[in-house]
Length: 280
Image 1 (tube, rainbow, N blue to C red):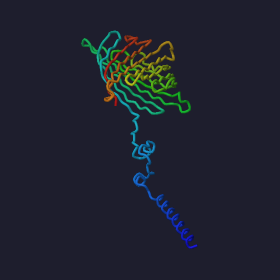
Image 2 (cartoon, rainbow, N blue to C red):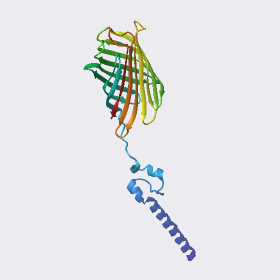
Image 3 (tube, helix red, strand yellow):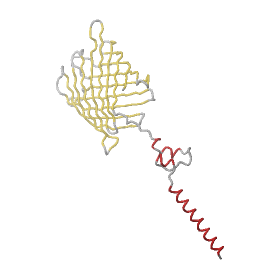
Image 4 (spheres, one colour):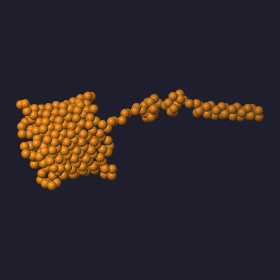
């Protein structure tokens, strides 16, 4: 009887000792939990667990919505004569998910045989904003001011507002069709404020990582005399020369056609410019 009681007491003590040891082991924190405040890592090769630790997270700075560029090069122009000269250009833009604002400046100067053949400059600004309920539709506003020393009109101011429809909005191709109403005013010649309609397109085609083609065209009809119009076409090919230095080579064609030019002015003017640009 004493022997049976002794065996029973001994077994109970052994079970109690095992329970106490197990509870102590469960409450004792591991070294990894003390350092990282995380459960101990069973396998060093567990990439999913490692990616969840704070040490594996790297902060990525937000991308600025602002971009700018400046460039210079040679120009070729054709009005009544063909001349060669120089050009300067610059731009800044702000892009986000819902809007785009871009302002650009172009200047062309050609001097030949002790005479100014071409002294032309234009500054233009465009703003576009998506309509919330219709993701492919947007409203737009654009304005421009240009000066031409050798043309009779001297200065021409234009402003338009309207709507646009995004036919394509992929990363490689953005194509916008647009229409609206506005006015134009020349300083000389017919200096009246002329109400006009606007129809045109804008395209941005990223052919590959190094080549980009952009184009913008519009026809601006006189509402009072619809057969009279202005046409402006611009096409620019940009080839990246150095990604590290954001250096590119630009080739730009600009064509302006006036169906009813002032006396002494040109019907059609073409400028072809080439030069390097630096983006920042």
